[in-house]
Length: 249
Image 1 (cartoon, helix red, strand yellow):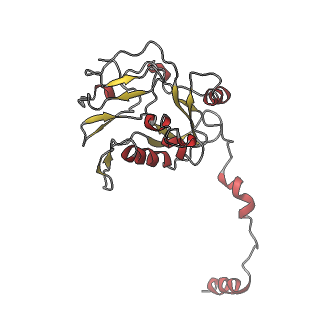
Image 2 (cartoon, rainbow, N blue to C red):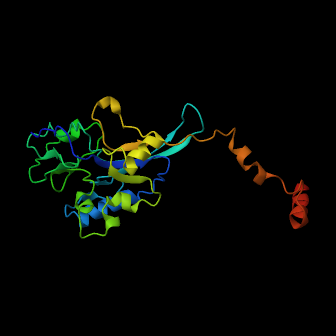
């Protein structure tokens, strides 16, 4: 088994803006593509196009209809991946030490050579962020694109997770959440960023920015009323003649 580090030099992670995410799944596609081609650890698909699709993803987007206590109803898109928790429960339960948390940056990773696919880490994770790759027989999870963020062969602007680089709505942000002066930390402070399921005690590094409240409308007709006004009380021209003729039948 692997012990968690007493402290980490940095806390690299993501800040996800639920107010901005449009649910386009560009982050999902970018993650799948990079980890198939760049990272060199293919994410297998068993039945990608059937009625019951099955495959391995490190990032998924779920969509929900919600009705807050105040304000109007909202459609919220919720991206989910590993949150690289400070007190990661997936690490100490691993019987082979395959799951570990790096002291230098806080990233939680899996040594696939040591993983036996027992699934204990997935059982321990309160966020359902680990998936068993059925083809490889090992657990896989978000790596924060560790092979991108330190890759000096890439242009500076590309040294961030593929999902962040790809997001067209700028809903995903990457940085050091252990530095209160970093852009991501300031964003969390300004928008009231929250932990996912804090009652679990995992202390996730990734933060979510809650959706802003929407105005409550009395009804859709009120919004569309200017566009629904009658142009004429009675049809004119050919339509008027046709209406009168049919009315006599």
